[in-house]
Image (cartoon, rainbow, N blue to C red; front, side):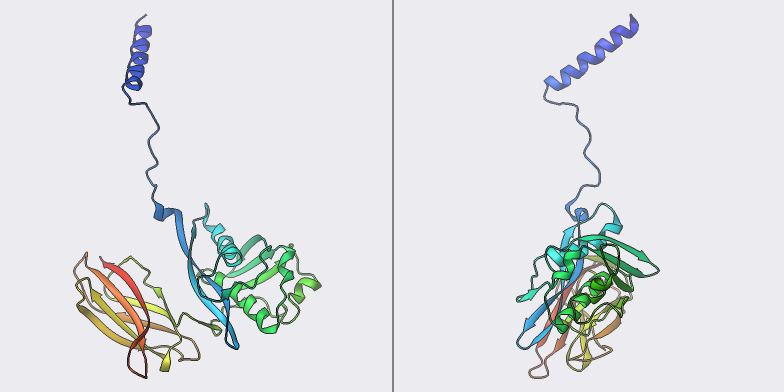
Amino acid sequence: MKHFFAGLFLLIAVFFLVGCGRPIVPAPPQDVNNNSMTTDIAVYYAKNYGNEVYLVREIHEIAKPSQPTLLYKAALEELIQGKPETKEAYTILPPETHIRGIRVDKGVATIDFSREVLNANVGASGESLGIQSIVNTLTEFSEIDQVAFEVEGTLDEQSRDWWGHVGLEEQPFARDLSSVHEPAIWVDEPTPNQKVSSPLTIKGSARVFEATVNIRLLAATGETLEETFVTASAGAPERGEFTATLISTPAPGTKALLEVFWNSPKDGSEMDKVEIALEFD
């Protein structure tokens, strides 16, 4: 009887709470925020400008896959189905192409395409750029150094011929940025809104006059905290890599703006500027 009254009292209490507009509901998830649901990836599209065809690098925001290993597939699907943001840029891969799977072993990623991938109708330069757009997109991931292709789980004679010009005899393919003309500058490190400390290392890629890359760190007030320049490994029309170190020691919590650009030899104007918001620990 004692247990009966205890249970009855509990039941009455529940009905009272519901009747008062306070239904008992599960607690909301603790890790829900929009930022965690998306991620940024780099993809490489082709562009035909004048009499030249080359690659452009774009950063796209995509839904974050449920598993980290699915990010490779998501990046390639964005390369195939995504909409290029650069004017006159386009994807070379046939839109009906499906990614059947990707496996990574000792730095080599092997992509298994559906047979529709062979439907592209391009010349030799288009085939080379199409292959490199895939390879450069996947080698953005630090654990991938080279990329190989399969079609429907194998590499038969038709697949090996690929689009009829370059073929797959040279695979696995390595990363090659020599045909990437846009943007003129990008920064791989640090990333936007990253919390950083001193000394600050800046790494990136540039295709600029005489390989000279200018770097400036500004406080939120606009005051210049530090300014320097660095020489990339190659100058335009080639593309080179650059690394620089800033030694400024702003107080913890200081918000800053990193600017990376090059100066026009004609009038000294600042060209192709990249701006990255940062906060110092």
